[in-house]
Length: 410
View 1: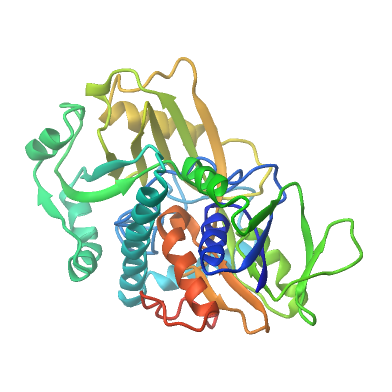
View 2: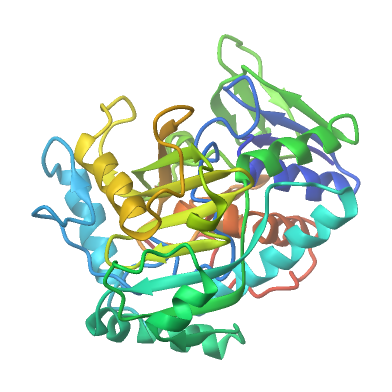
């Protein structure tokens, strides 16, 4: 088939790879000038296990706080009706059963195995690291994450609860002065550079059944016949199928087809700094549960990621959030990163649906498929979602059950 993909982030690139591997002729349309320039640009880098990652699933491992200096979600410009409606759905999802969380974790584990297979097959060096500590400042935090730990155990994820001394043996760079009640050790957890992986995979697919049309914005999706209308063009470019992988832009294209996704752009931040002293920096990745901040080793850099705000794409960087990232790094790994020069600060959207799960599968409109709304888990879920979507398009049962990750009733 001739297939159009809208969006060349990590989800779009991996979807293009899988569809081309199945023998399809694929064209990827991207409004930016390169792959992984928006939501995939400077992500936290965390792969599976996914459930303990910041903003993975509502209600697992952290409480939603909207007010005060320790707010986990900042409302920029006040609480609009649209934001309130989305937040109400998000908070309702925190009381749901663990079934969606278990389904997401299965997808993340499958995705990681798929990613590792691709990396080995094509010799992709994407600054990968192994091992993660989830840091607990208090016993209350340990109690809060127990539901998530049970889901992980039921999913067969290797983990152990360790005390502060063992945590510091696993990550020798941890400050001895930081208050630490204990940690969750995930020895098989992975992390890596999302943007680098996407660009390496894009280079490998170019000319192998995949064409990338950069600097090309899609204005409209055609339903009958199926195709896309490029900005500035009047004629429909026809395809046998169209796959939306464009994050928040996916939601903007659907109302014209009589469909809506309750997707919010929840913006987060990352700070990437050169490694200063290896022994004072993380060897793998760590997550501060209370702050909902991750610190990840990516080659010769350290990346600190966190913060969440409902705001516009052009909003100014929130100084207090960035200060919290720097402070959290200094709390746990003082002297581990060089912060006086060569620092990259990034603010990017997490295209998030209220239940935290992506939409993967048929849209209900003939020829239109969806692989979008992965939120903070785009990197962790991309390879698995892409393979599952390709299987569905070929009318095969995916290797991993998607358990309702298609067009759900919102």
